[in-house]
Image (cartoon, rainbow, N blue to C red; front, side, top):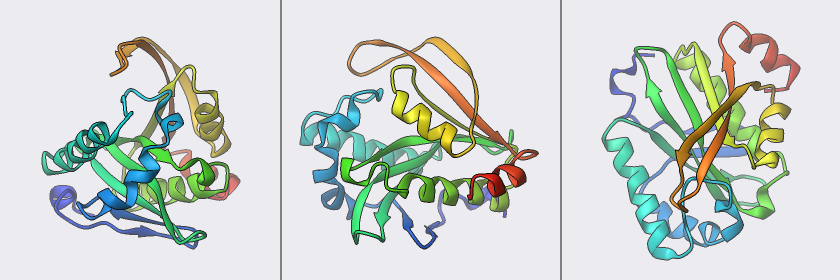
Length: 195
């Protein structure tokens, strides 16, 4: 795939369980109630506690796509027939054939249901098969053990901890745990983890 027009194109990724739709303005109302689940933001770098916070977050995600720095998606859960959250390709570097999957949040009712695995499968397959990437990385707070477990469960390799990696919108200094998938290991990981 030619990546020159990647950000302008509408990439809809879909399997039996999930549909990832490029984030658009009409998704705002569909995701607002999900985003108001305060526990979603406990370990993130974002501080979302009211609608104004989410409005800023949402339109920042759309602006990042226009600026060609990230590609956000709305997550539709086919099992429930509802929008369940959002995820994103970010820190995209096509010259270095790498990007990050992150900024992922799902309604608590959608967590630990297989939705995350279905979404990661779509993003990883598209990244390696269509975008021809060498590396896809993920990161999370060192405190977010649930997220770390989910990454290991789909075959991500834990690479290490970046100490004092960032200051969150909450004002705390965060250590981040980095994980990755690389193209040489992807075929076996895909089979072994059912992706």
